[in-house]
Amino acid sequence: MDSDDDVLFAQVLAARAAGRDPGRILGALLERWRRPAIYVIRRVLASYRRSDAVDPEELFQESACKLVERGLDQFRGHDEEGESRAGAPRTFFLRIVKHAAIDFCRRRREELAAPSPDGEEPEHQGPEVAVAVERARRANDREESVELYWKAFARLRAEHPNEAAAWDLYHHEEVGEHEACAKALGITVVNSYKRISRAQAHLRLFLLELRDGTSSET
Image 1 (cartoon, rainbow, N blue to C red):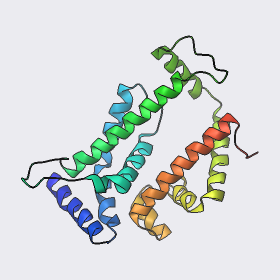
Image 2 (cartoon, helix red, strand yellow):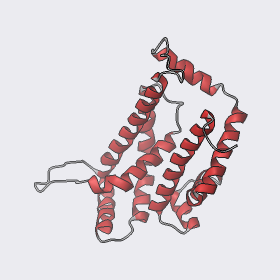
Image 3 (spheres, rainbow, N blue to C red):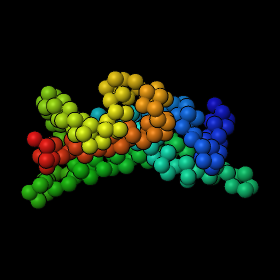
């Protein structure tokens, strides 16, 4: 499998170097790596006790976008003497996945440890506080959460229609595969990853604004 991955990844890099779109091949590789990537994400979330904090698929999408936007240019494979530098392409991608999951968990920990809006420090900063916060969040009214989500999606559709269309296909209509999503939208697989990743980022921001009451939406 790794040798096949090496060949396909080499084709991706060669296509990029030649100015061709490597989306189809890269999409196939990412689908191969989805299961091990989700496994890595779940292990990291469990180690930080954040298993319920995020859908692993979201972090997989974020990692795929990082690979497309920066990782392909950073991968060096082997040096002139044939010694491995970054390792196999799958190992290289799983390293991106691992760091994305760790960064997410650290951000959440910092958010939970942040002082309250009135400037007062919380009395306790231990792990029991984080557990209590997570339980409180899960206990929130589900109907309110759903309502906020659709308000955020309506704003996404109004401000970023291309990203909203991709998100709608992939998640609401449960297409579930970037190749099918790309075909339906008439775009490349790489652009499908980018649009869904951007949509996810926008939705997170809109939801935060709605929950904080800072959005201009009514």
